[in-house]
Every structure is written in C-alpha cells, then in structure tokens.
Image (spheres, helix red, strand yellow):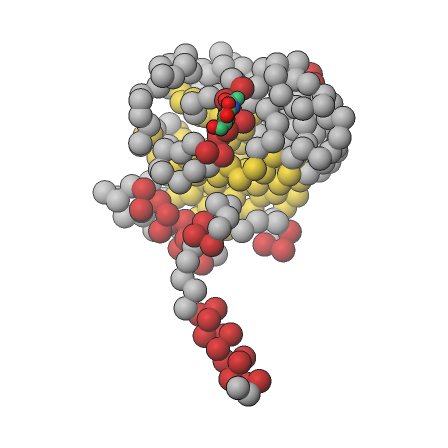
Length: 269
Ligand SMILES: *[C@@H]1O[C@H](CO)[C@@H](O)[C@H](O)[C@H]1NC(C)=O
C-alpha cells in the first residue's frame, strides 16, 4: 500500500469514529490547558476567580450569572467557598452549592483544577447525546457548558502526593433546561487530615460529600454514600447506569434512576 493511501485510510478512520468520549473508554469529557482550560492558582483551600457565565445558569429555580470553581470540590454561585470539612446538606448558611466531591483538596501538594466555558460543537454534541439518552422525554441540544475538572488532586496533610482524585462537573443548558453531570474517574481518598483523616491513607474522619444544596434549607440532594467511607466507591455508582456518572436536571431539580429513594438525612437503604 502506498504511503498516501495509508494516510487516506487514517483520515477515513478518524472521520468514521463517531463515538463520544465516554464510549472511547474515559468517562471524562476532554479537559486541560490544551483544551483552553483556565487553571486555578496553587493555594490550599483556594478558588478560581469569579467566572462571568456567558449564559445565566438556573439552579433550583434561580438564575445565577457568576460562579466559582473552588479547589475543595465545590462549584458555588454567590461567593467563593474555602471550607474544607463538608457539612451535611441542607447548609444552614443558605449558600447554593454544587458539590461533585466536597473535601479538603490541596493543589499545592498535588494535582490541578481546570475549568472552561465552551460552545465547541463537537463537545456540546457529545454532551447532548449523553443527556438525551438519559432523559429521552426531552431531547436536549446543548448551547453552552462549563466544564470543571479536578485532575489527580491531593488531600491536605497528605504524607505523599501519590494519592490523587480525578473527577469532573459539567453544567450545561440549551437556555431552557439545565443539567449537571458528575463524572468520577479515579477516587483514591476521602478525607484531609484537618477533617480527621489519616495522613497516610486519606481515609477516615469526616469523608467527602457529593450532592446539591439549593440554599433554601429544604431542597437538596445527597449522592448515596456521602460523608461515609463508602464514598470512596462513587466511581462504581450511578443514576444513569454508567458507573461513575451521575446526571441531574437542576432548573427544577429532578434526580432520575435513584432507587431506592433517599432519605433527607443522607441515609440510604
Ligand atoms: C468499596 O467496594 C468494594 C468492592 O465492592 C468493597 O469491598 C468495599 O467494602 C467498599 N468500600 C467501602 C468503604 O464501602
């Protein structure tokens, strides 16, 4: 075969590859500086700058125009979050909160937190296809997304930087429906040492919390296992039959596929 026909077949091969990123083996949508991501500064308990959302994001009925991507595994709307030990939801201080994995990250010890707003048609196509598959009653065509990724982040007080957590939160909308996707790719620790975790293992104490806090003291959702040792296994759980992926419609909060239903105190059967 001539070199030019090999080249042609390579091009053809990449053209017919219609799989989304998750079907290619990674749950995570593309991220990192080469995707145009911003990187959070290296500060324990640090945050991004205030991000002006190019499309206001509706969460539990209220539109928000700015957001912060906080190192400690939280996206917040009305101010930065530096708290490192998670509190149970609903939070008494009334902050609306998206918590893919709220725990004591220290990006000085290891790892990075990335984010970008995107209108990239290929990525929005993948996100739309995934959400329409999970919520088939309402076909969804994303027009915007915020992709935040915690890449191999270490815990505060870690005696080595070898244990890292990698997870992602995606906020997306077509301007009518608002969805959040959590992707858990690799979770190796649950707790920093200031939350009574073990320096060697990153386990014990008050483990990480995953879920949503509306800010109104009655509406919230805890992903099963939150603040228990079992949260280490969130890479194996799902409400959409994709291990490690949890997806929610959040404009008027709707959790699908949650069986059995959760109790409000976060206990589950
Ligand atoms: C995590 O899952 C494994 C495999 O199912 C299980 O053996 C282990 O007990 C689980 N860990 C916790 C803390 O629940």
